[in-house]
Image (cartoon, rainbow, N blue to C red; front, side):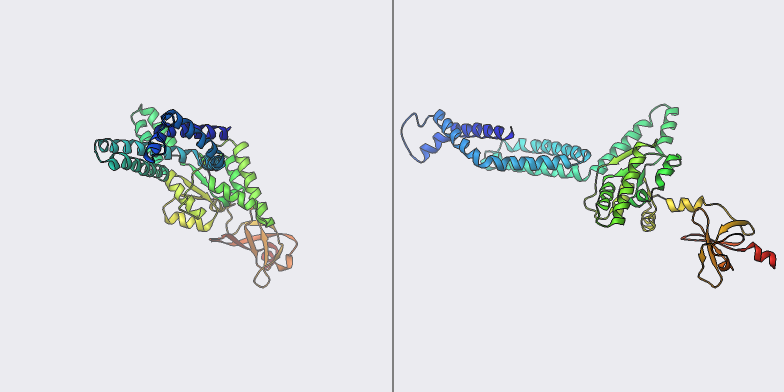
Length: 367
């Protein structure tokens, strides 16, 4: 169908050009004096025939070019395409206003060629400004919307202000693969909208397509966690389809997105946590949360543990709590493989987590 339309377009274009310029071309080269050949209608028919055969040569190239443009436009996120189109329209309007006084100039190159050149350049610049500064325009719209809300009734204003203070939570790849974020969302401890950036989804898909079995399983687990959050949990999930093409690193894109959206990065990546803190971007670290909710134990308390291996120092044994907290049992090497009662002697909090030191209660009683 598209190829037929192109053929018709070529025929109409050839007929129009032949009608307007073929008689002038014949007179210019003094090819003949026959009146009917000099007729614009003859030129129209001749131009249509020439362009009809020309269309069979160029139609495939034109179709491929149009499909290339169509594929590019379809892949663009809706927000990018919208602001790029707005910028293009404004650029064309500015070019039109600039070209109005140029029409009165008698010099042909100024009145005909320069306006065309200005229209193309300013239209292109308008599209680029709208496309590349879309995030700033979205922030302006958000700010103006908040300003309008301030003029409403006082009770409604308080309610909306409190709701707007709940910042969106932007998920990192590591926290999605970790999986605990789904359980946290299910308990309703995480307020606000959950944002899944498109570039994070692409990274997960790339990991899931990896030839390495471990990476592939981690990627598929991350995709399963996202499906669970979106379909099974009562939380608001939104896909962010934009991208920061000038920033190659995913972590840097996350920090930039958090600044643009005034959101909070949710991660368990130690390095990303430090980078975000340095740039004053709020972060929720799942590991910090896990450490904060571990059972509180104090020196002097008694626990029942299962010693599973020997420690680094002589006669030490190692056991673990249900949450993974390591317990170093002094003199516990003789109890490896056994469940014993221990008495806590000290608790050490490190950057890697919490470590508990204890000794067997039977040895304490023996003393």
